[in-house]
Length: 523
Image (cartoon, one colour):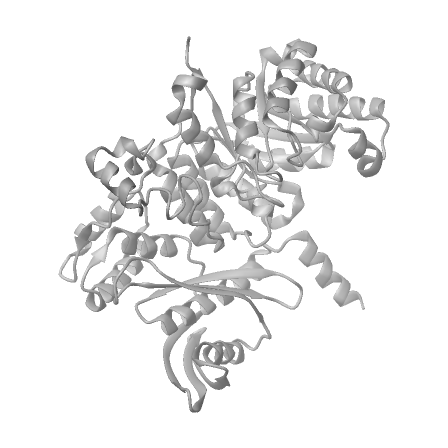
C-alpha cells in the first residue's frame, strides 16, 4: 500500500494563543513562526486578522517573513473579515484564507440565529467571495461533528463548488469518540463525494482527552490534513497535540501507512520555545516532550534499556531532538565558536542579538563551572524574543533575614535616566517587585511566579517566570535567567514590564482589553 502524505496545519499562533495565559507579542509570534517553518509544518495559521490591529500586524508580518510554508488567516463568513484576512496574507509565498461558519443546529439557533437555508447560502456565497482573492481557500464547518449529516453534506458540496480547496470538519468541542470520528468521516465521504477531490481536514479539541486519538482516527478514515498545536495548547482543554500526532504516525507507520513532512528532530526545541514564550509548562509525564518522557527510574527498566533501548523505548530521544547536556564551551571560548554552536543548535541571530547573547554567555561562563547546550539554548531563545528594553536593571541590593523586614534597593535606567527606589516587602522577591513598581509608576498585580533551573548542579542557571496583570486585565509574562535566583526574578519582572509597554506602543492589546479601556474613558 502506498504511504499517504498528511499535511500538518499548525494553529499554535491562532487557536493556541487564545488559550488563557498564552498570548504572545509580535516578536514572539515571529520567532515561533520561524521555528514552525524550521520544523517544516505545511500550514501556519498565523492569527485572526480582523480580531485586532495587533493580530492583523502579526499575521501580515509572518506572511511576509515565512517562505517555505502556507500562511493562513482565519475569517468569519463575512466580506469584511475576508477582506481583512486577504490584506494580511496576500504577501505570503502561498497565502490561504480560512473561513468558518457553524453548521450544527445548536450553533445555528443560539449563536447565529439563522435558518439552515440561510447558513447554506452564506457559506457558499462567502466561499465564492474569498475565492476571488486566491485559489487556496479553506472552509471550516464549525461544530461539524454535532451537525445534521445530510445538511452538512449539502454545505460541503456547495462550498467545494464555490471554490473551497480544503474542507475542515472540526470536532469543535471535543465531543466525539474515536470510533465515531472514524465513522463520521467515512460517511461524509460517501454523502459528499466531492470531498474526495479536495483536501479533507480534521480539527480536534481535547475536552475529553481524545484530541490526538480522534485525529488519528480521522487519518484512518482518509483525512489528509490535521489541525493541531505545539504542546496541545488551545481553548479550554486545548487542541490535539501536534508532536503526539506526528510521532504516532512516525512510530506506527506500519499501521497508518501515512507520514508527515515534519522534521521530528525539531519537536523538543519547538516545545521548549513555546514554553519559554508563554510561560506555560507541560506536565512531566506529557507524551513526547515531557520531562519524564524518556526517563527510566525502575531498576528493571534501566537494566533493559542498558541492554537494548528498544526494550522500553518505542522511539529514540534523538528522533525528537532530545540530546544530552554535552559540555560545549567555556569562559575562554571566542565569539566565532559561540556563533557556530548557536547555529548548530538551530538558532539564527542578527549581529545585535548575537552580541547581546555572547555577552550574557561570557558572564554566565564566569559564574558556572560547566556550560551546557541547554544553558546556551535558554540564553539564545530569550534573546531572540526580547522586546525593546525600555527599562534596564543597573544594580540591586537586598537586605533580608528571618528577624528583619526585607528591603530592596533597585537602580534602573529609563530613557538614559537613572532611577533609584527603595521598598519593603514580605521577603526579598516581594520587596524587589515593589521597588520595580515604584520605578515604573504603575500598580501591577502579580498573576504568577515560578522559579526553576535550566540544568543540574549547585551553580545551575536559575530560570524565573513572572506574569503581571494590569488594571484592565491584560496579562504579560517575563523570563529571567541568572545563577542568582533573586537577580533572575528581577530580570523576569522587568522583562514583563517591558512587554507591557511594548504592547501599548504597538497596539498589541486584544479587543476585550481595548473595549474595557474605552468603557473606562467614557465613564
